[in-house]
Image 1 (cartoon, rainbow, N blue to C red):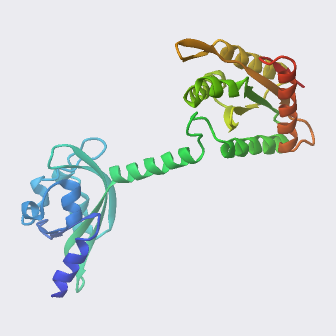
Image 2 (tube, rainbow, N blue to C red; image 1 turned 60 degrees about the vertical axis):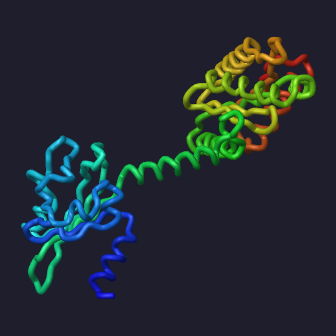
Image 3 (cartoon, rainbow, N blue to C red; image 1 turned 90 degrees about the vertical axis):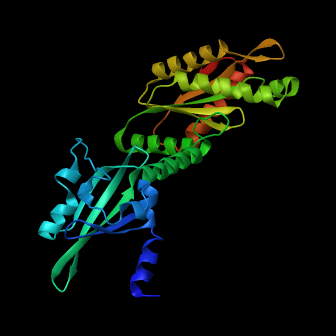
Length: 298
């Protein structure tokens, strides 16, 4: 295999689009990546000129770069590497966002052409979206779509760090669905799951944007509320309790009433995360002991 064929075959394995032009801007090479990104085959493109406006590059302002302001043309003129973000015209008619790099081809001190590489930004955006989705899934309880315990613990640690360094107070509310076992035993786990989902939707709507309510485990949830005093925390706890009490789940042809018990407390000097969680948990069980469907604060 000739060296030229070897390198062309090698470049065909690259996902980015790559093409060469001579000093007259005539396209002399068009790799497989360019075919995939643009929809134009090498047979359709090689031998044409980039100013034929096949790809019809435009910038963010809609300027037609192939007719003026072409990065490749500028590189042929001043022999300088360039990068740009442009939108090329796909064979099917739509625009594709690409990042372009242009490099002059120099032989024996003379510029004989230029190579342009372009990367499909939409593909990168999809990858980034997938990464962000994975991050969400890693921190989210799949059933309730609330933050999971790991994320809730991390958020709680951040609030504790703020309290210790800046003195910003926060409150914790421990919440537990009353008689949850009965829903599972009497109506089945599907209804039990529905109860968890309904209560979780109430939690999402009841909290402020700077706060979180996460699933701690089973039917237990913990809310972390930033920069609150006891009166504000009491108001939040009562609002959550009331909203859950006024929600219901449909099961076996009847409206099933749902209530929760809550234990709420503010952070104190010398508290560890374990201290404040344990105190909120104890207050929760005090609510259970005193008849459920109530909040106990300390």
